[in-house]
Image 1 (cartoon, rainbow, N blue to C red):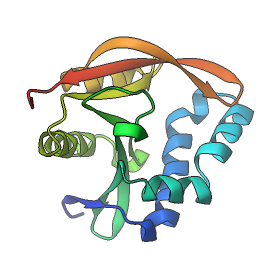
Image 2 (image 1 turned 30 degrees about the vertical axis):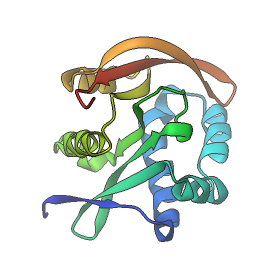
Image 3 (image 1 turned 90 degrees about the horizontal axis):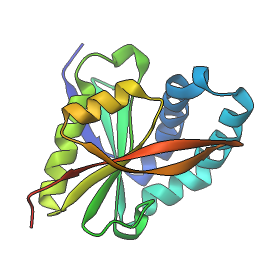
Image 4 (image 1 turned 90 degrees about the vertical axis):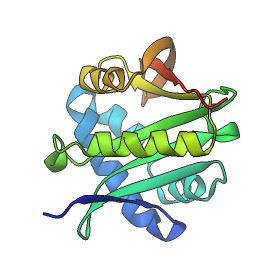
Length: 174
């Protein structure tokens, strides 16, 4: 197994991104949610039209993590009008996922380090994200990286109204 590498996604990656998004979301949340709610959400969030729209948005970017020829994870960033909550000077980490077989190999930290680098280059004032309040492992990961909870917002997974913690890391890029 080679070393992990990062690559910015292009529109040509839409199909591979879509499949990876479905698999990683199902692996992360499928066992904790009703299959019908998962299906409703996944049909809305992970389809060809939505994936291409997000890839083409000028204020969003996706990155793949690869090991050799295998794509093992990805993350998505949003800024300005692409953010799910309008935070001035904010860079939103909307998604950060790793295939189950590759978890525990510091790939999440590799992605987070790249996110910090991008935030510095863009001179962002805040990194922020929403994380399901039941996802204790992810919350600990973000806390280890300096994020703190500052609010909550609702997240509708199918018909299940859930609560996301909003977490942020203030950056010294002013």
